[in-house]
Length: 215
Image (cartoon, rainbow, N blue to C red; front, top):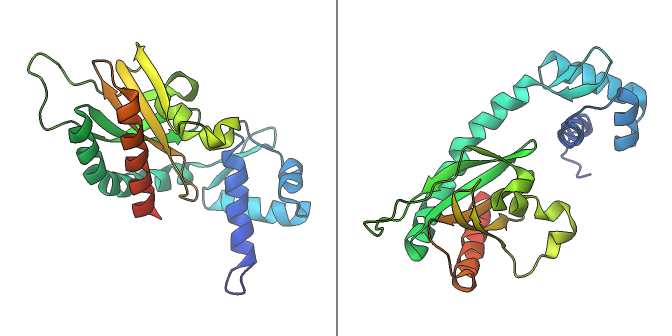
């Protein structure tokens, strides 16, 4: 640990990070094991975080993330949107399809920024991502969590879906990599079939550009 860091604060943030991976919650003892820190220290951290609303304990003693985490998470969405929109607009115009940035929220992916191409065919209505989609059911979610799984080094670097009813069109998505604490993806959605050999690398580049802005 760097000498300038606060060990107590760092451990408190670790508690939140671990609880974020366990939606059903953990007991103080289980948290202690996950963090490799004494149960007494973890208990004090949990009580402090609970007082501030960042942790809540259920009747059976399990610890879960608190409402204060939701409040903070909502505040970051405008930051993500402002950073992503210029890149998404460029991507949408390059491919002629709706571009979006999606983040993981629990077991679902959610589009937080959307850009449509400035010009579309008169007879075609632009496809738009739906509000929330279970991670496994959409390319945006599958791409965003790729770093959790054996797909960490997925080739060719993007995920494809053809005409999914859930997504409302043909989709390509790539993960936003290297931004600490963020699971997100950049995707495109089109009412017509896409040339993935052409669109895929452009989506990957857009995801790389957004990651660079957010670091």
